[in-house]
Image 1 (cartoon, rainbow, N blue to C red):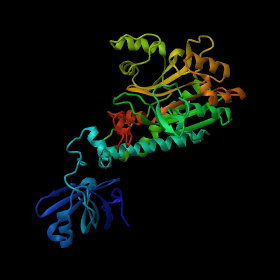
Image 2: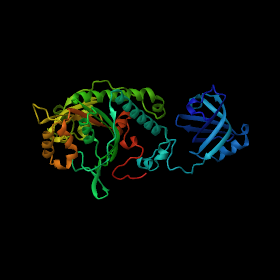
Image 3: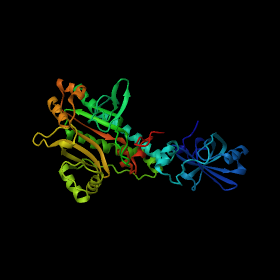
Image 4: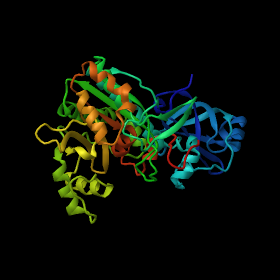
Length: 430
């Protein structure tokens, strides 16, 4: 039975390990082979005159990134990674890798991100990239655990839909027999319908699609969203839930992914303290106006430059609250005493927006009026509006982008690094 490399210790007399050949250093009478699996790197030390002839021959012919099975004695040595080495009694090449490699997995020769994504299967062998996806997996595990603990029901909603969530822009039309259909921008309408069904607390982790023509380091056309909706709740209730979830995810990653973070060269995580500051939109644009050259005023959205300027001032995670009703979706609830503002919020990291949410409109007539005010035809949303005629509780919710969350957690330079096979304006394969 194979022994994971992380569990190979000098206390073992013998081990059988399986992995990729990370590096080969031939010093004449002595060859060092660094063997890598998902748990770490092990030095295989091959004194050519003191190993069986078949071992020396196999080592001589092996190429980097080949898959090998190696058995032998374990010895302690300060100079080897992890303070141990394996002296092989057998060395079998299971699958030989072609040479030269299209990408240096040992990371001595850097590669541009497009090159890396073209051969993502090799790129993901790099300890740094593998660490990113261990962290992503841990984040999603903690999200589901946290929300189940808070008595949320996990749902799955359609990704092929007849109407846009937020109007007719940024849509991917698809051929759906004789009908017009689109890839869904968000599960927003469906999770609200589940409030009308009496589910009270729901969440979904799934793909969303936006036909944005951006070609930036922070946009994707297919992303993964964590969506939450809760009945008998206002925006403050779901903001508390969101900040606690973010803090819990950081804590879970810090506790369970320390080895992966170390292998990937990432710094240990600092768990953000809650509650996060609440910054009114009117104050946010004042901070932005002092920090950027472009003019910004009431009713303007926050540009990336504005977000960075505000982020420098705030320093950590924070919420921008009380947005102008005119620039938020039709389902955001206006304040009774000042309908020009609504009960909407964005969760911000100093680098960018991570999440948007709001208390929703639950009154059928108000919802129809707001659809019309946004230039939308209520008839196109009849399937969504119908539950509001039969008793809809007050409710609120949010959506959190997984890729941006992981990107900011680890300080990645490009959101594409946080998804295995990104889809952007130019990339459709692999």
